[in-house]
Image 1 (cartoon, rainbow, N blue to C red):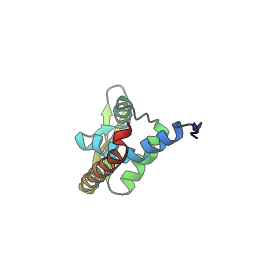
Image 2: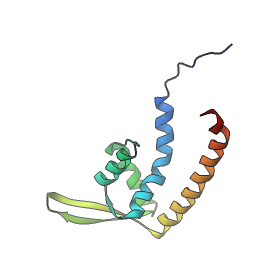
Image 3: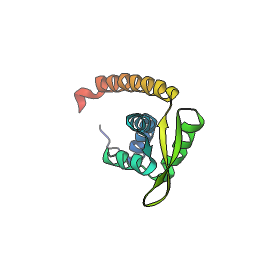
Image 4: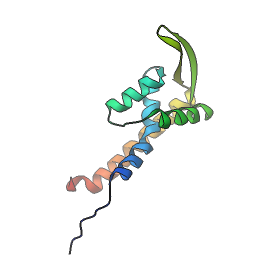
Length: 116
């Protein structure tokens, strides 16, 4: 007998996305120095919807861990902006996270690929 799962998948989806955020944020910052609203826009464009309340603590942790630094830059349309930069340690972690991500997705694809 088969049972239909009535479990809401939104929470599981959110948890999977949160797990990938550090990799995505470091990737964005690695391309070029980025302002928080630019990072949020890129994540939203990729359908990894993030609000400032999620992003700012993660950016602070990345900085405290020595993976990013920031600089203040004057803005023509308001207060100075904080631009985030990746550090050499951040680049090293990014490469490791990319390799781990590729291994993980290959493993998951191998298990679920035929069922999609």
